[in-house]
Every structure is written in C-alpha cells, then in structure tokens.
Length: 451
Image (tube, rainbow, N blue to C red; front, top):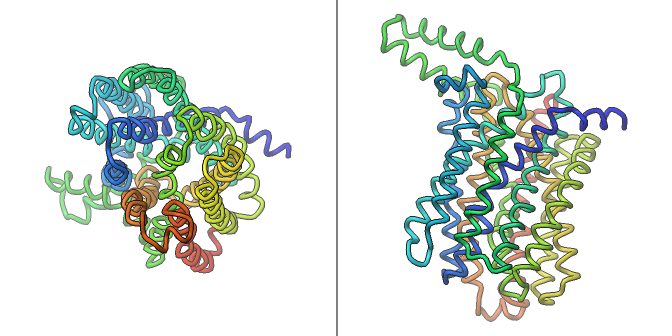
C-alpha cells in the first residue's frame, strides 16, 4: 500500500492528471455541448450522429504522429523541449478555434460550424499524441509497473475535462446562456492548459540518438549522401522506421492487436454517442443530465480510475481487460432497463454509477495495455497508431448509431421488446464479444510481454 501511495504522490502524476483534463476538454467542444447545441438547432438524430464523424480525425492522427517525434519548432523547442513546445502551439490554436466557434450558429452557418469542429478535432487529436507520448516518456522502462497508475491519472483527468468542465457548459446553458456565449466563456479553460504546459518538466529521452542512428543506416542503405538521399533517409527514419519497428516486433499478430483495439470499445462508443439524446428523449432535463451524467460521473471516475489501476496491477493487463470488457457490456443492459422504465432518477443514478466504473476500468486497462507495447524511441508514433485504431472503430462505426436507433423505431418486433432504445442498448452489449476472443489469442501468443 505504501508503494502505491508513493506512486500516486509522484509529482509527475499531477502533470499527467492535468494533461488528461486538457485532453478531455475538446470532446466537450465538439461532443456533448455541440450535440445539445445541434439538437436545439433542430437537427435530426441521424444528422447529429453523422456530425460526430469529425472524431474520425482521431483515427488517422498516426499519419502525422512521426512529425511530433522528430520535427522541432524553431525557438520554442530549444526553450521548452520537444513535447512542451508542441503543446504550446496546439493549445494556442485550440483557444482561437473555440473563440471562433462562439461567433457562429449552426442554424445559420452549419458549414462553418462543421469546418471549425473539424479543425478542433485535428488540433485536439494532435494534442493527444503529444500528451500520450509525454505520459509514457515521463517514466523510465524500469518503472513500467507504474503504467496502470499513469493510465488511471490520465483517465481521471480526461473525465474531469470532459465531465466536470462539460457540466459547467451544460449548466451555463441551463441557466439561460445561449450556446455562443457558453463557448466563449469556457474557452478560458484553455488558458489554464497553456499555463500548465509552461509549468511541466520536459522528460529526458534518448529519442534523438536512436533517430539519428536510424537515419544514418538509411543513408548507407541508399548508397550516398547527396541532398535527395538525405531527405529520403530522413523521411524513412521518421515515418517508416517507427511502423516497421512495431510490425517487426509483433509480426502477423500486430494485425490482430490492431483489430482488438478497433473492436474493444465499440459498444461503449455507440452508447456514448446517443446517450445525451436518449436522456433528453425519455424526459430528463439538461440540468439533471449535467448533474448525473457530467458532474457526478466525472467525480466518480476519478475514484474508479484509481481503483481500476489497483485491480489491473493485481490481476494483470490481460485479465484486467477481460474482466472490464465483460463488465462494460453488462452495464449497457442497465440502460436498456432505464429505457424500459422511463425517467427514473434512481435507475439513472445507478446506470451512471456502474457505467462510469466500467468505463474507467476498461479505459485504464486499455491505455496501460497499448502503452506497454510502445518502443520508447517512437512513443508518439506507435501509441498514436494503436490509439488511432481504437478511435477508428469508435468514430467510424458509432457514426451510424443515430441511424441504428432511427431504423429500429416503429418496427413491430422492436415495440414488443420495449422500444428502439431498449433494443439498441442490448445490441451494444454484444459488441465487445469479438474483441475478447482476439484478446485471448493475443495473450497466449505473447505471454512473456504481459507477465
């Protein structure tokens, strides 16, 4: 217990927690707050579901992740270091974009709102690459047993950024502020993220030495040292080598690992994309949603994430993922029950309680799992590749969540079972099964990695 306490009192954990808040907040801007703004503007459930496809950017951010491992920003990198300099640039851009959104209205300029939301997704997904790389780089290989704790702090911070700060946005709307004013007010949070970045310690790394060695090897392979060969060698060592390293280390199993990551949290994503619409349609007020779903949920997740890290350390990464996946699927059935009984605040509170526990548990185990698989010389690229695979599943498939609900509506067999929402949440509970089968195969293939 003493060892656990020392781990969580480490100053680096505070930085990871604050970075987690910065990572979760953009999902308020183009997620929960935007969803309710679009609903108030009169968009259909199907349109809102597909609008969320801007999150697909998170599934392709691995394409430019190598640049964040390698490219240095003039003046800033020398002054603040590789990770901090990129964070300062990205957070400054995020601040400007949120202010720009506050001067738009989806009723009159949906195209502009969509474009700005896409830019926020690009900037925030790039910020996530740097934040995740910082979290892993901050701890040495000898401290890999602390990865579940770092995942817990990152998850806790993310939910504070998404849940608590999201609740602030919803309360402002419920108290009479129009959505444009809400966005302008909450943009001040990004100023806090910038101040935190200035306060961070840049982690030590041998990344540059390994990258330069890889570049020299490619220069020798290309057979010369003229300008084009140097450019080609730089590109290969920057963009190709990190991916080559990943696929060489895991062989054909690398594809199974990526497929597992794609499918593991799809059910949760379907539920999350439609949850606010569901709460509204069955009769909960915006204030009740803010209190239960955002405020209470984010506070609980902080506690649950720490608990999840203890469970994951005790049972191991693979068994932790297996247990959390089953629990995550089971929790979705409670939302089916809520859809059946209607706006019962007791059932709502219980659903939020269990959903936040299983979400925290699955996320902590999941983040620790993919962090465990990275090579420290290519942290940003390899983590982004795996995280992107997860985001690909959640955004591409969950984009059709609204369509699924609409297609279930008014069908006779669905009505006999309690309605479209009851059936929808039951279907989401089954979506985790393929990934658990793949996880069993992966764990048997690479026992030495996860023991």
